[in-house]
Image (cartoon, rainbow, N blue to C red; front, top):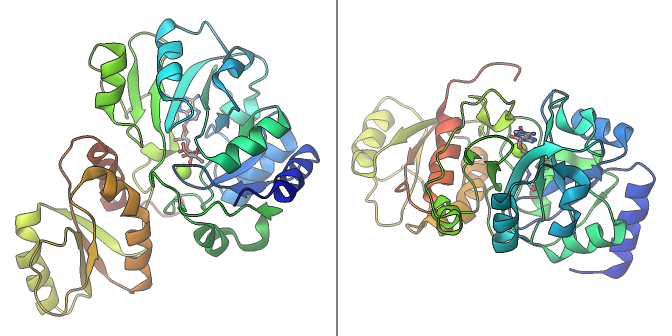
Length: 323
Ligand code: TXA
Ligand code: MG
């Protein structure tokens, strides 16, 4: 997994303006040297993402924070000390090192130290920042294995580092500390309860903000099949009715749920962290099954359940063609 030759090769590619896919603990990332504007533009082109949507800059360690951010509040240092490396992204006021290409012209920058030996090895050897969105095409489900990246991006990347399946399975939690009260811009792999424990106060979720967060677009994280949210007790009757209308329907939900014969189950564990871990995998499987409609049971809004509910809600939202 941690092959020094592959790490050296990755760094060489990055130093020459290349783009690589690499594992993090959350999802696979599509990475370029954050200070190389042309390489960053290639990331947008490969993803098919509008250039105004900002990217997260990945750092080798928290000590690099002042290179990229200024006016860093004590809360940022406290969160970095508690959760980095880990599935937490901090939005802070940028320094000149964070270019318009990375920030989409905003005066803030999103930063995180990922917790994966391969990502950390590349970052320390590079000695700089890596701009890396999730390694999927814009608007599609994020990849949690190297195989997913290959399916999505094929030969468009200069190198794909395989670090095994991602341990967290959903993207990082994004916390805005750039102005005023801390707020969660995207629930993710670090539970809100954990943030609140360290900050000693509630941290509200503020996804409908003025900043451009592509994850807040209605059509994001969408599998090909339609997705409808259901409370677990309704799933069976809804599936039965749809089946009767000739709809190819499946259910995303726990093993304990009784389903009518002929309705495939895409099992999500009851525990929120397990559900987060398996979510994208199951959505991809549901796609391969050629369903018309996936009935998705919402997990409780606790711990990583918040992130799972958020992604399912986006998958179920009306889709705008072309986004
Ligand atoms: O777990 C993750 O965060 C993964 C792995 C690869 O690190 N990355 C990821 O990147 O999910 P991406 O680009 O798919 O999502 C980054 C999110 C976007 O929703 C983007 O709009 C937001 O971060 N973002 C980036 N810079 C921002 C800023 N200055 N202010 C607010 N949101 C920002
Ligand atoms: Mg993404």
